[in-house]
Length: 312
Length: 312
Image 1 (cartoon, rainbow over the protein chains, first blue to last red):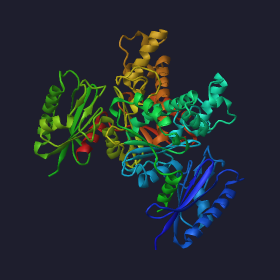
Image 2: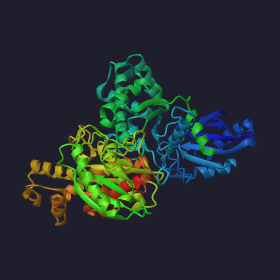
Image 3: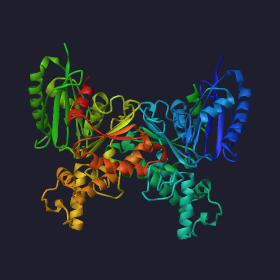
Image 4: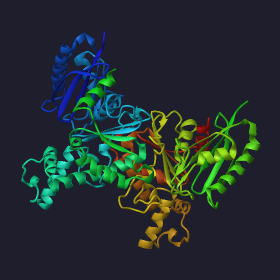
């Protein structure tokens, strides 16, 4: 009998889950909100209910296990620890809680690591042995693959590119430090830049100055309509991201950097400036060698598939 | 019959070589100057002469191969490319030249990668699967090990920590860019800081202001004698290095960072400040987890042993 697994991607705002077969087909999937639950226990209750509906649909008896990608999730310990972009504080024994709720074996990892495994197994990074996966969502996550293996590090917490200091003494980050890359280069970061600029300069010439609630989507839309400030926002975001990626290339010398998640939907509007500033800052031996690509997997699929790949 | 290999470590100023057996014993070794040769060909001629003396001594018929560690050396192509700390420009087909000169198989890698392999096989990193080796010599080199494997990257040029930008728009580097870590954190870098400070502030209160030719050794000696400015130089160097290492920990989450080479001889005078500033800048999940250690292998042994390990 063909086995199935459940892949779950827990994000800062939404959680996506899907039943996946061995070939990487997502048989059926659902999404739910990550926020709005009083405690992690009520979140797990809600998650279990959604999961049981999916598993009943696909055939409960075929279920072989569960893989979860979540911010700050640790492959080795099965815990989420101090995740600044999740509503729960401290250390959460996520794998244990889900195991008890669903009575299935559970493996977890960083959401971005899961996406990297998904891309390597089914996506743009198929066949690549050295690449970096960067997720640009509420925060900035990353999965580093070297020699065909995901880098978990000694304690399972490797790949926190979002918390590399991009601007020393810069913006306050949810992690309590200052100048972290994700405070500039993420869906949240570009909105923060826009609001700072409006406060500082007014920017009456921009479509954005008339918006009450600027979002990364509204910046994208304004840029598509040729709004100069919106284009400048992508250029600035691309500068900070490109400069930091130039440093990362010097560490793992990847074949490609693959972008995934909300802000990466901006495509060349963002990737163009990232490429320009990364190349300008690369050590000579790396110039014109590193491909910057966007994930070709639709929406949350890479994360679900990656999480599922963990479960096999 | 027991085979032997020749391990060669080519540095910015000196080249060390040794005949190594399977157990990692350096049977016999020699050093020579890297500089003072008109072309790379005359350097290879001199190197071959030295090597033949050693090999004759150890038994030419037992020689199984040659491993070389050198700045910017590429494991995949056998070439040295654009090495800012070596006297030769452009791309040098080092493996081919040495193969033709010695009539033995030759494998090459980055000098710091070779040191990392040496530490992992015979030194402080024995049994470690995730660590960073940092060489503090004329420049700053590094070897990143993850999942028990050296990270070569897609093209063999991974591990250039010395060219991560530590101070954006900072000091001019030999690579042509500005603010590279090695312009601050290396034997050359600390001397550059000292000379800058003397020019800017006079520093008449320091022993160093009376020296015509400040070296990293004379700064070390002054610091050991309690010279306030010399201690401040180590603090400043440790700050720049510690801040950058905190970012690197977020990428590969190593068990340890191992220091090797000239400037690391300063021991706690340097490692103390590095630890202080690294810990102060670490993301919470990494705090008090990463050991900072000095290589226990004498002098050039780690590099020779690492180069030799390549040859097996």
